[in-house]
Length: 246
Length: 246
Image (cartoon, rainbow over all chains, first blue to last red; front, side, top):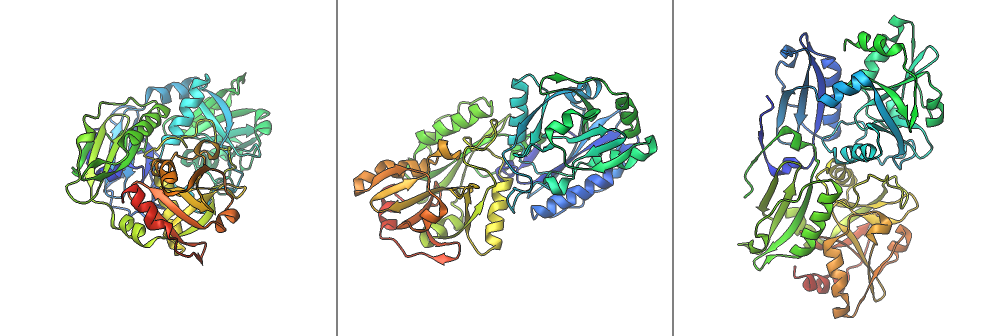
């Protein structure tokens, strides 16, 4: 299923949408939420939504795999591939993160901006991550010009403040709604935490009890270093990973 | 040459660079400048530059064609296709343009930003143009948050102020250097105009003697309406188009 695909050269311009789903032996994790987001992404790009067949019947024949659903303007592709080794390592060992301004004020993206869509136009996100890696980090955290922490290039920000498990409100912050983060917050009460969507400045975030990046393949990755400063391990990391079934 | 191509699904994420060249019966117009920009774009994305063969031997067997050179992270593709009808129409009839803020200050793009590279990640540019069209315009002009006019999604801004033929300085404005615009300015003295690279606010631009969008396929397209206000034709439009050989 990771074979090459035949496309028109016009389909190489990132003008499409996708989802990455954590494929388990039991099936695709959070598939309805991913398909809902995919449909919204497609609508924002004026893309037709093709019939994808019975995706819920997909199973990982190893412990876990990456299921990708890709829509271009002319074709769609479903692939199953191994979880990238980096994702497994970052789930296990945590991540070193640096924060960096994205250049926008909160609410300052232009009216055509596709912030709510998971588009295929990833060159800037890949460049941002190369930039972070060139500075000795694994990933980066985008900030608004006012200093609000927003999201990572391919992950949502989650943090613990006392007994509150928090993430950033996507609409207010103009960021992609995170499927894994939203699910995690919905489960928070089952382990005695209260879910909260709130804006957080990078300075407030430094004082959080724990910080994670949430995404479909990494699941939850503990931020073990932020802007060069080491952070203590949290007893919540294995509890929350277990809650998510990773 | 516009046949489908076989690619890895990973190549659908816009993580590459390209050039569009005006292909004439005499050969590819401004090929060295396009190849120079392509090499710089590739370097900014850490892409290897493959041997492209003898592109200078390409000829259009009709009056004009579009030659595209596409590099993804894994393959490269060269295509020849007809000039899109919209480009021919906009060259002939001019364009209705609306201005809209991009959300960045001048110089405010993040350090990893690929503004100097012509990347394949075009979803936002296509969305911007759909937005403009939904408002009765053909194209849009991006503004900085301070109100400086920057560029169009796929074209450079050129304007006439007295005897000066002007465009925006790419490095200062953090915009893609325009191949057609740079060449046009280099030819300006031959028709008695002085070339000038300068920042211009949208209010100053409204007072210009003439405004054009410059790009490889449209060549030069006269801005006949800006933000709903009609603009008078300029005797310079046919002179400059002729100078460029369109």
